Image (cartoon, rainbow, N blue to C red; front, side, top):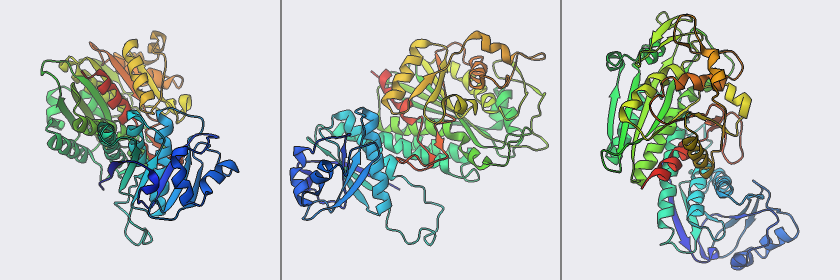
Length: 491
């Protein structure tokens, strides 16, 4: 469903809207700019702060009814002690979620004198909180609820000056909405074919070049590692290449790589039944890449970008790969399969090797690759590893700017010892310890000849618990990290 974003300049007390959200920091004094709004509530807003009924703590909210022709309701939203981009994004997301739950179709957001980045983040946050996947629910199941939230108005001092910021915010938000929708769809609907069709739609919308290869084409390319995963399923695997040209054709592109396992049963090394349904999210890396390309297509930065996605399912069957099998990747290296549930790296191996033909200036891959990253970093930080420190620093900065913080883990050569094989060039898993690092070492064997950074998003691409600002389900990570990195590299 379309979600509109616009701006409003002037006194928010004059804005006719069902709901106005006002974001305030911890222990903030009542803003003078909202004096008229306070009068419309009979002074309830200023009293709430004075009497400390509202302290401005992070995610704290207080709803007040107003009179007159302006806002019908005012929602105070706490930002806590944060004063960075993430605080505005989160406050707007909390407001958007409250608005959607209340059944209002549109709401306005006031966050003080927002700069361009603040306007952009408010637009993104409002969309994050207001998003909800209801496509598979019948009307009766929704209980006859009111229409969903479809619009947000960001209060600014100058609408003309904020025009680019609101457009960029809308571009990124739409990319996140696309990624979240793909991620939450059940695996029987979001298939490799569906991901390929989505890529084609993005290409058509933004005049990009899209190439989709199936099993036969991958066999010709010698992608034995990728195809080993796909041999257990009757669904045709898809290798998708999406190219955006924003600079001179000869200029080296940034390559974005995504793991697209539409469902991961673990294969012969089958996963436990408990919580296996969450493995529909194993294509979140691919969703993030497509979401980023949607945003990039809208923003049109002056840079070349190529997106590379490997998509299939990992299933147990009579034709599935077995532990102990040895396969050969497209770069000639051989791999001993120790655990068929370590399949994402097998798909990415051939995709990363293919990326070298573009002579990219940098490659960033994103994958829900290891449970070990959740043990190491929980659900807060993205695991970041790579072969070039300067590029790693850029990616970490992009993640901070986009509210998707990452933490670098060491890719020391000592860890490489764990994936040595007796019969092949390497094994696809090491021991239990340092699983995220050994997985990255495996990928590094195929990320040769260019600067490469790996994002392990297994703990951050989706959440199994309610996060207040957004419900359980897909988060939109790593769309913003990708976009921030790309526009940081643009001319």
